[in-house]
Image (tube, rainbow, N blue to C red):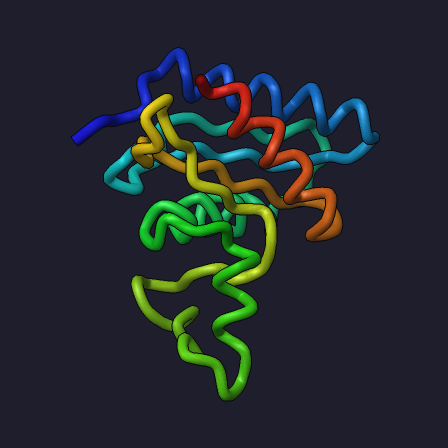
Length: 134
């Protein structure tokens, strides 16, 4: 199994921090490896304490299903094929801010989860982090 290495995980966190500061938000940023285990984490000074768990769960959710968390959220609405999935795996997060991280061959090697602002900002910051991991 391909796995994100520490340098890649830290690059993702650094890029996410840079994007957070550029748009003026305080974020919690989590990167998990291919096994959905926490690899790197940062909490910007003043970021919400409650968003620590959310960031980690967004990263885990994105890796466990190899999908953006926002896409899972669309499928998990009432009547959807994944309705109530958020109750599985000791709790998932099914709104934007979690993105799988892929290597140059398209293999998922980990994921990033970001929380601390609007879901739109969370997703933007996660995108910056995911892009920088390679």
